[in-house]
Amino acid sequence: MKKDDIQGKMLNSIDYYNKVKGSFVINNKSSNSNVEIEYFVDTIKNNSKSVGVLEGSYIELVHNGSSNTRLEIDKTNKVFKVNKTVSPEDLSDLDENESDKSVKSRYEYSSDGVVYVFRNDPTYMGIASESLFPQETALWYLEDQSLWSIKKRTENILGREVVVIDGEFEDYYVKNRGATSYKLWVDTKTGILLQLEEYSNKEIINSLYTKSIEVDRKKFSKTNLNENIFNVTPPKGYKEITLE
Image 1 (cartoon, rainbow, N blue to C red):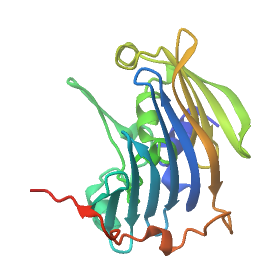
Image 2: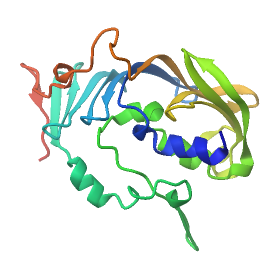
Image 3: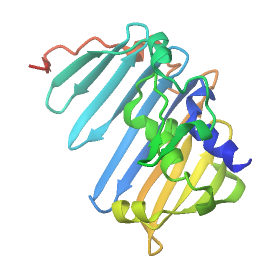
Image 4: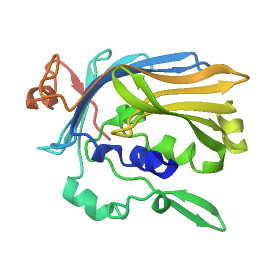
């Protein structure tokens, strides 16, 4: 794989799989945080579900593509929010980058600097995108291709073939992230980011590790990702949070 091939798949990963379930852990040493997310995503029907502890609360996020509805449930505080989302058809009208998915099209340069062009996510997968739709990582970390290299073209993580990238951060990111270098493990078939490590003086200070993943299997181990798990009916006994 060439550099543009790898970066392009990361920028457009949702085009390379239909159904995926799994989990990953994000660690941040500076904030002493450890977040574990379990996810279920169906890019055909634009359904998604993610569950995990965020900022001390057990949060469940569900998007139902049939009704264009997103439900956020805080199970710790027993509250919920419901929002209507934009349909895929309307998103396509809004997404000027939908027709041109090349790496080059995702950067707009001017005298004022660079503008990063993001694709819309019709599944509304939320934090699961850190792994499943890693646009930010592909745009920010890999912008200057002279600062990163392909360390290994084939490695294996959880039965998935990955390409391993070694890179150095630009000064801006060194200042803002506290890390000087990084390593990425990217699924060669889908562009999913299976693993990430950021280093400062060879010490890992930020990371993402995939614990489990199943992609486009005929039968998933616990669920076939049917409509039942993407139910957006608010739970009984919970209080709705509304904008005043």
